[in-house]
Length: 110
Image (cartoon, rainbow, N blue to C red; front, side, top):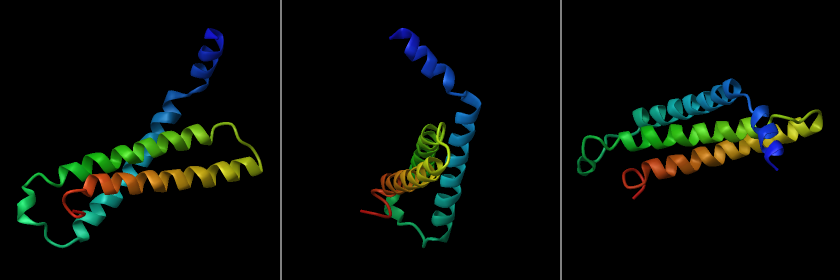
């Protein structure tokens, strides 16, 4: 059992994993910043630091989406790769949506 766990751990390449997570996080950060800048003026009841919550939670959700993207797209080939890519994009979009809802909960979405 221990040998199998060490084999799985060796197959994860930290540099590729971190790269995917950073890309997912940056995409999420760009999208939430664009949304916050294009929206109307904030409610004064929210306080001055209300914007920190979405700017932290949404990129974290994007990083988790990048993590799942890395895990799903590691070992496939042929039509399985296309299916894995489609599934990972859907999972990323769902996680980005959930992160946006959690980040904006209590401010834009009461």
